[in-house]
Length: 414
Length: 216
Image (cartoon, rainbow over all chains, first blue to last red):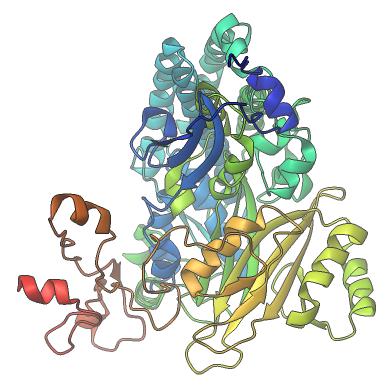
């Protein structure tokens, strides 16, 4: 008996969330494992798929290949010793993670850092956002077959890395913040070099985005693909560009400002359809807005101390003071051996990171070590929507979807 | 807005009490009211985003031993946040809590993680499996009695063994991360070092498997 079996358009199916219609003849579903080592799974995500022809009928993400037990480790070390572990959460934007963690602990200690320290943190977080979005953009382009975008974005990232290195001493694992401040003040002339970077970056960003925004192949592979409606995005706890791409303008930098974000003017881009293309557009615009913020920070860069000078039991003073004053030497010694002294209590602080909202929930019983530290990782929550999203898609659409969700497994698995 | 929500919540659920918190308003609710309270907050008070869900282990012998904590956010009035906590029921070895997957689909993975890390069973969860550790892993690592350095276990390679006839022996673990012991008077001991809590000469390694002894 001849049976007609047509493959419905995947875009329409994704939008409706409809399962593939059961064929009239007996067919076998195929199990296919994508990852953990696959170029488009951005790290070590494994997708256990069930296929009907080329259409997914089931997708089960398998996580944990990068699980290091960061939360267990945090319970066993002082607050400052955990800073390097935050670098390795979203390792594309370590400076933003450092800042989120430091503010979380400071909130628990009811400690306000000076304006200059806040400005440095905002500046580095926005630079980290540009760097993370560039990588996300380059990898997304690469996934859907646009090679050259990656080359442009890596070149710009390299310039940012040079600036990070000059400021923090490391290109990648910056460990820049401490509870109550940062490790060092900005070097001489560094702000001018950041400014110069911004000036030359904007035209290059436009050129890079131009490679994709009206690109026929890119649009074919992203417009109408992987649609996430507002309601679905909220029920799965999506945050960051993925939520804003679905039309919810939640940006904690605006809605619950921290570290002085209320002093800077910037816009929050939101998408209208919630497809892969919208998420791409949101990230592109966020980079322009980050440049806007950076320029404002530099324009009104405050003078004054760059660490909390009154927090004697929390922030170890800079080296030159340790070597010249007995009191500060003792202060440094106590903080290094005992850890910063944080009062008992619990706090949950969330920061708007490049991948979404990064939260730290800290339960303290007092002293230098947290009793429980939970990391709310944006990539973990953003990926939890995959089993719902992928059903009814083509395999090639899954690649677009993964690229557009822009996750980092180091953060997802913790 | 969160203050009004807390007042309304307490009027609805008289057993709810204030919880100490350094930032957001926080409320303790009895476990039996948990799902209804969260549903009320979502539907009537606009807390439409479940930001985070986790558990705390208050150490062996503590009563209650486990507490589940929910962080909510209202997107209609952005920046409004609320923390809801409830103590788990059941014995220490098998604590339970009701599942909220029916309210927020995103709770699915959070509850799987809690089950994986603490061994809390979420009643009504559609697919309660481990998520970060592998299926068949015997421990719950975020419980306080679990050593930082880990416990050696067999790797899940039954299928490989069946096909190839080879047994896989896990590489020895190297002692866990470097940590400092605070409050240590002897400065040599206070220096950051790996805590070899599971296989020093003085203390036999817990969970040493038959497989490993065979190799020795």
